[in-house]
Image (cartoon, rainbow, N blue to C red; front, top):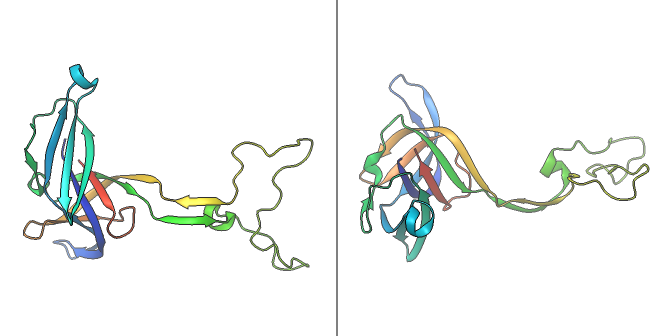
Length: 184
């Protein structure tokens, strides 16, 4: 299994050999170092703990593997990936704070006429009837974003080895500077 950590930079467009344009996200990838090998006998599962150190900040992540071949101190870099590889990207999405039901769940809101003065973006009825409490899983206003999102079946459209950047087709979750896990 291929894996690496990176930081989301920004979006751009990449032209392929046929002249077609593809939207792409640029990810700054730094070489990662294996800091710990977890085994089934000692820890109950097999995994590699890796670390990246850049800009005075050390990030540690763990990747579960069936049979890890690396040992402590090994360096994993961008050379394991190739153009056209299908990857899965995980990151923390942008936090949007407290949002209403129109933005959070896509509700339509109330009508804009017939005396509706202040209820254009309100949720409407939440189900009264014979019940005396709000049903479970009722969609309401609340905090939005800041969740771990995984996007599958993205492909690598360009690799720039001198600058350690990876161009991934489509959008990657998170804001600029978000730590991104890329697995293939």
